[in-house]
Amino acid sequence: MRRVVASTLAMVAAGAAIAAGPIRLDDSLSPLREVRAQLVNPRFSSPSIREFAARAPGVQVNLNVAAYVGQRARIYITLPPISRGEPTLANARLQWRGRQVGTTGEILVGARQIVFEGVIDEPVFREVFDFTVYYDPSLVTRPVPVEPVFEIELP
Image (spheres, rainbow, N blue to C red):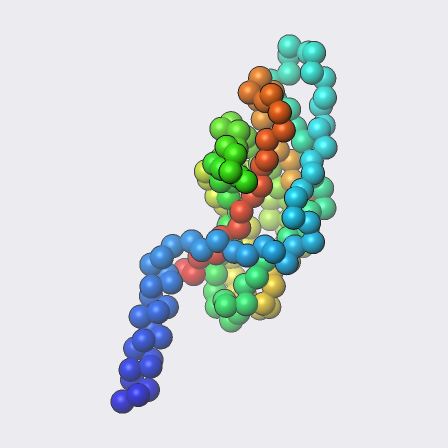
């Protein structure tokens, strides 16, 4: 009887985790807490510039996925509308290339895309990203934080 109750509770808990949707992953194991991007096209006086690009190559991201080892999962990258209490530029676009898993993609504020899909083998998911952020220079009067967030879902 105890086994039936325990396995039933485990199935209910697993169902609740799936039904809960995406779960934000802890990235505190990453070596850098703040990513600094270098402006690629700093010609501020040119009226023909419609978009600025800032690059942050070689950003190591370590995600705590210990609770999901042995499970099939999807890891997403998202660009939240608010970062560090400040609004992210509404028109910001984040492009990335993963060096280890090898995914590439692009997202807008509020969107998300898969950076990994498969079985979680280790307690820490590691990837090195090359990020490029694109934004409208007419909307920027000071540096605005643009920080991607990683989420996990169990299919």
